[in-house]
Length: 126
Image (cartoon, rainbow, N blue to C red):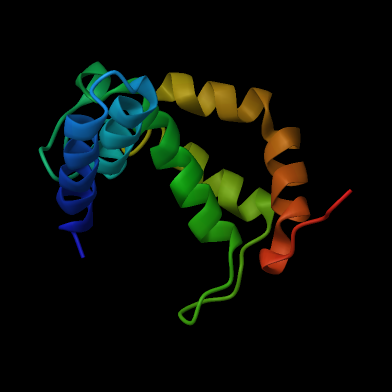
């Protein structure tokens, strides 16, 4: 399970060889490799801490956890926004960058709206 970060980064590195000027591939590689790093250094695959984790990885770490908490899976029912928010906020400074938590709190209405828009895998089409 933990190897998906390294395998994803390797796949995107291969794409970068074909398209070396594609900045979006660099960011995608950093996201793939670092979205399971933790702000306190206890994550994987490299055990990076703080701002040594690329910003895009720190942002996607929170988004990934929010999505996992608010989505139903075979292991659990979906948590509501307030429960997910509480869990995430408690992890400020350990799992998550406190600045990213602050941004999350400032934009939580957008998180709620996006979750509702894509609930149960159904996308609203205009």
